[in-house]
Image (cartoon, rainbow, N blue to C red; front, side):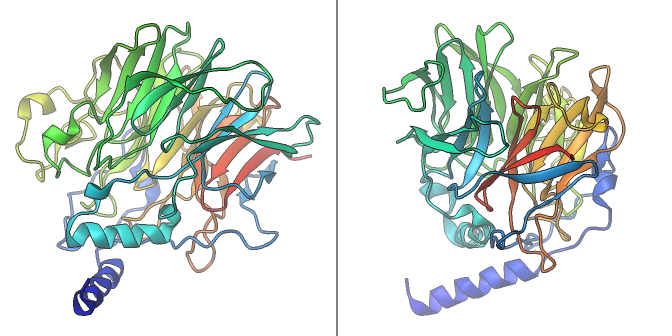
Length: 437
C-alpha cells in the first residue's frame, strides 16, 4: 500500500474514533419492557468509542454484587467465549475468534472498522478449539485442563443429547460421539447440517441448544451485515433461529428478523425458548436497545426493515411494509449497544435469594455509544415466566478508570455447584461468582 494512502487511512481511523454524537439518555432509559426510543440520529461518521483491550493487572478482578464473591475458575485461556457444563460437572469452554472473512472488510470504511475493532481485542487468530476444565476436588478452581476438541472452525455453541455432543462451528453444525468422563475426543465430527458462512460471515458466532425431549436442535444464525447493506441475497437463512431435526438434519426457520441472536436458554417455568439479541448500530448512541425475548414459532422480529416492533429503519432499501406490519416487539430491552450475548437462567443457582429466579446476561460492551454501555453481567428478575422489575448488576468493574477494558464478559452458565461461571475473552479467564462466605 502506498505510504501516503496508508497515512490517510490511519488518520481516518483516528477521526472515526474521535467523532460522532453522544447519548442524551441513560442506559436505564433503554431498559425494560417499554424502552425509550428517541428519533434516529444517523451521522456522516458513525460513533466509534472503543474501550481498548488491555487485560487484567496482576491480582485485579471484577467487582461482584453484594452478598457474592468472585474468583478465577480458570486463567491463561486463549479468547474464551462460550461455556457448557457436562452432566458430570466438567466445563467445556470454546476458545475461539472470528474465522477469515475477507469480504467483510472491503473498502476504506471496512478497513478502518477492522483496525478500530481490533483495539477491542477481537483481532487475534482463532484458537479453534474446545477445552475441558475439571474441578475434581470442588474447591472452585479447575485443576485439570485438556484439549477436548481441536481443528474446528471458530466454534461457539455446544450441547449434549445422550452421547451425542453437538458443536456449532461458524459454517456447520457438527456431531461428535461422547463418553461420560472422557477428557478429549479424537474422532472426526459428522456434519448435521451446513450453516450460513462464506467470505462475509459478518456475525459468525453460531449457538445451539436442544429441545426438552432432545428431538430438535435450535441454532442461532446472526445477520451478514448491520442493516442489509450487503444486499438481501447475502442474508438468506440469517438473522434467524433455525429448528433442526436431530435425526435427519432437515431444518426450517423457527423465528426470523433477529439481527444477532447469541444466548439461548429454556425458561424453566414456562418452558419457552428465550434468546439474547444484539441489535443494530449507527443510528445514535441511544438506539437500538439490545434485548432478551421469548421466541415464538414463526414470529418475525423486524430486522432489517424495522426495530423494536414496527419502527421503520429508513436506511434499508428496498423497504418491506408488509413484513414490517407483522413484526412483533421483543419482551425486554437490556440497554442500547450493550452487546448482550450471554444468557442463562438461574435454575440450579445457589447465589443469594435475589438471584434465584430470572436470567443472567453477559454484556460484552459497546463500541457505537458515548459513553460506554455494557461491560458487565446483569440479572433480570422473572416472575411467572416473565421479566419483572429492573436489572441488577452481578459483575462490574471490567473497565478501568481510563475506560480501558481489562475484560469483556461473554458466555454465562450455572455450574454443578450452583455458581455462575463467566467467560471473559479479553481477560482470558473464566470467572466464578458464588455466594459470599
